[in-house]
Length: 526
Image (cartoon, rainbow, N blue to C red; front, side, top):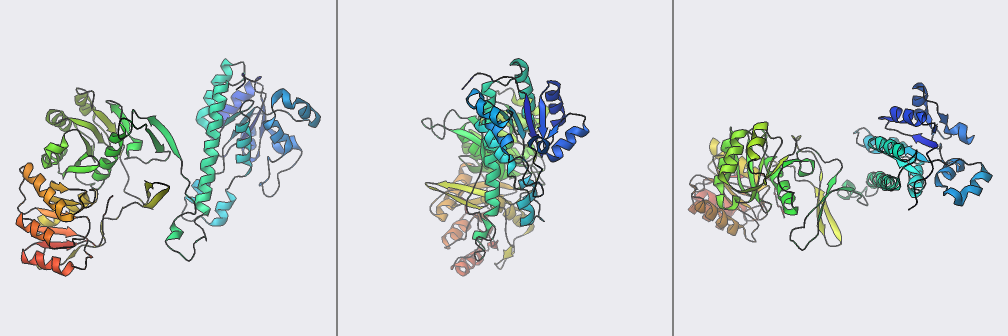
């Protein structure tokens, strides 16, 4: 990479997002830099009393095709791609002036297609052609040209010019060039994703929901000390549009650096408490599975009940809340257990002060989330990627199929258990009573084994199972799970239904005076 070029003398500016462009351009003008601009950008700058030369005047070629062709001209691209002295003779012969700074951002394609009323013709017209060409040319020639796609970089450029006699340091030019290629790659990927869904699989309604190719961009957020195990290198990448209420949007307030496993488990913890909105909820997660979940009118009690669900597994767990963490709950946590991560939408000032007594605890504020919306879920396999809609549906309809209907407290606990079992690895069984889990069986190859483990968890925690309820993430295929539940005093069961043995399973429930509710929705989680 070469040394800093001569001072910037000519800048080309063409922006859709005009944030801070007037102040930036005025600073360029104050440095006696010639400003070239197109269309709306030129008009804005002129109206702000900043001298500007329109590209069409500079090239002697008017915009044509309703503005589709503006900057595609040798005077423009020759000026951007010129390589200093190497091309000086050609530049002189053709009367081309070097363009040292290119400031461009693109038509708002993604904003356009996000509108429910957007038609294909409208989307097509917001596909930028000249802009990406300018950016790629400038980024390719970063040894001689500075390129900017983001208004947050304007001050960086001005500061570098201040300290490098009007030029921009090589390291910054390179960084901005990479950013420009990342920007155009994301833009082109969005176009391919959108167009790839249209009229490609018109006779296949399932395939029509997905694009021919999947283009996604993840931004490097931080390096990890290691991955799942110390011999694995790892890094954390985030979505630039990560929504509030996620580990990717979280702000770490204190504690050690998050590990790979911390991040994965925190994601699972947040997903669990997102199932509840009205009452304070607490979830304690270990190895991506809930080991204790509870809701209560007081957050302090929600935490206590979640911890009582399985204090043995809670050691070194991840604790998540769906409401702001308060002082009394924070005090109870540090007096009760060893915890790796605490995450909540927000943390009160008093709670932060209490938690600071245990400075190693990682404390995250993730922001208050909006109700769940349709999104995609990804699972990597060797050589491929499984993509599905996120599991946002709770149930289709609650149908009572036994002779006895659940009483109000049973129905409340059934719905609570159903919200929890959705987040437990399959095969999943959740036992619950009084709005708290009393036993969780996760990830077994046999559903009845999950039921056995859930009951053992309750026994170890000295929790009462009599009149508790049971949730199963998928249909119960045999009567053995019902027999086992009855032997432990389970009074009501919630499950999807759909097994060929449903009639036998319902009969077993009736024989044991167990109320059973079917949801019509399965929640496998692998």
